[in-house]
Image (cartoon, rainbow, N blue to C red):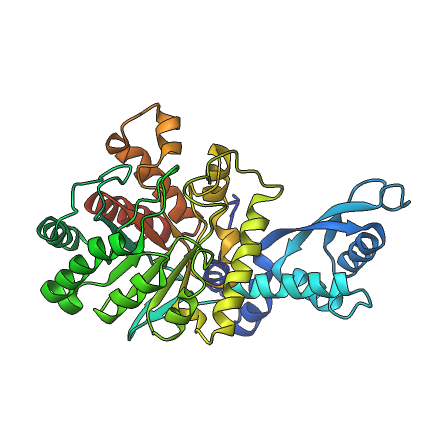
Length: 403
């Protein structure tokens, strides 16, 4: 009798080793051999590729290259490294000693990526709050105080309505309430500063006055002045769709606070982002942007534990791109940061199900978020809190084989 295992976490490997009585010292030696990855390296020159392949073979794994690279008939190739974590890390160490800067950089990138993915605890820490999201998740309830959001515009854009909805979401199990004063639906125009302040500030003030520390309050804004105002009123998180790209002063506001930070990938602006967005390597390009964002935050003295990354479903991505992102959430975890996804009621779900009205896309949204949980997402930004609280709890129980 045999059993085939597909294990994606070091903890699961260690559990299996211990279950059969392996010595603790041997567990430490073998655990990283139980997790295998494929690492894709883009645009290698033929001599880089040949060295990479030779070094991979020397540590007991392989690197696939274009068939004509060995004879230099093909001068540029992508490489696919295949192996277990322990040997890939050993390869990375050898590449870092090479004379070619390209290979040294590849070694460094591989080492950092595996370290972020395998060794990080995925801590989200801000304003005295601390969440370990390595094996847990949070639900962020959406509170749009706008007249024109794609799904619920005009429904909660009074203080009283916003307070009622906040209370309702907290009772349903929301861990975070995310207030937004500007619609960023495809094709939307920027809202001017005064109008956004007029929409958001009274709501934030009222929510914090009513619920105090019982609510973790996020504000969806990229404007430095709005962020400054709401943080002074007690907001806990700034959710920036622009990836620090729309207001250069926002970084100064964030560095002067201890708030949580969500940074999202977007291509273009809400006005033009869905006009034929094109990528050569979608996942890698998003990660390149994340790397630059994290670099800016680090240079500003901001602790990375305050930061969550959002790959930006529907923000400059086409239908296939959205699906690819959700199917590859783990690829964004190479920075050791929790990943937030926002699929709620979005058009790609409507396209799959042939449902035009966003309010009728609940079941599709739940399916997308359960899939994202299975793939490694940690924070779920949703309109429908109770339904997701139940669905994600069941999914997590299945994943953990316990409750």
